[in-house]
Length: 585
Figure 1 (cartoon, rainbow, N blue to C red):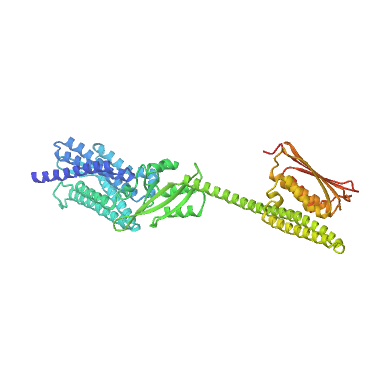
Figure 2: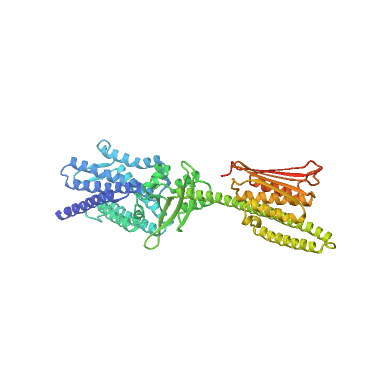
């Protein structure tokens, strides 16, 4: 008899120590989730059941035995609904949202326990309670029936869930079902043994707590082998709490398993998110607060897809509460046998990168516009340069050819008159005409190259004008030149304009005015340069600027000077040129 008693104590003590060890282990190592809490509650029930049964075996009087029985039944009456609650949490049942049903599920156990405590007043739980015999009443049988019903419903829920799941999820569900059957059978045989004397086990042997301890071992194996309670240890090692990326881990049932600190700081809605919440609540928040794009829809559909095993990434733009941009990547998690466990979703804040990219695009657009403007400006400058050069060349050619051709015509007219009377004089005029033609050709070539006139190349303005006068003497025109410029150093730019003005004026006096006498006066002081040209030609009753006068005006205007043409309409033509020097550096 002593051997059987010691064996009972050994079984119950083993169950107590194992339950206590599992409680300590899961409290210190497990992830704090509703599933863990429900599992720990089952562990506590086993601990209370086994430890109370030990005290029950050592009880020596009826009062102590009833007290220990009451403590033992705290666990016994609540093990059924506690197991059912665990099954509901494990399978993410929608019933959990209806708290009244959860409270109602525990109500029968509460009533049964109250009737146990008050048994001496009604004797409905025990008809008879002695040191040697227990006679059970209807409340006890109601308790047994309801407990088996809870266990059966929980097992059915696990079986249905295993049909829908794959891989590790199905294997661990089968292990839970097997672990559940053991204590149910042990308790069933104990009840039969104690009520109808079936004698399957030695009298008084209740192996139900011990069988629950064995079940706990199977739960532990499921935890470490099949990732029970969470999909860690695979996923959690990849989550570092101080990462700048916002990370959320979703299991194969689309339930939120974990998230890091950055996720809490980045998304305000995270304060209302708990582990084992459906991920669709978060994706609905994303859809409501992000810019609607096809890429956003694709990402949300991938997150919500329980069977998605493809790596996906894309960009989304948050509009509220703060405007931010994220690069989202969805990475599937697989077990050792490539069973799908869940997904890790990364939200990498790329707001600064996007802003810089937008700024670069904006700058590129500005640069493109500026390049377009510069191209247009360059084309305009090129056209203006071409026009300016064309005008310069036209003026130079006009002045050079006009000057040369006028002199040639005058010389040829003289030759035409003297050729029959004075051959020697005719030969002289032909020689002069040849010289004028050569000089004119040389000046034309210099104009094409954009160089200054030959007369100005190596001479000052006075010498150039005197050389110009000498060129006109063979034509028979009388030119009087006076000047007062010795104390002023005339800029070469001004010298060129003065020379060209004199050249054009003398050409016009000879060709158009038929003048016999021309007077040129050049005066200069530190404030201004003045040029006066007068002739005694036929005059100009209606002054119309041709190319020559227009060119003269443009040249003077380019250097900031002023030129005036005048005629009384009957005889003579005059030119007045003024170049201010007080604004010249």
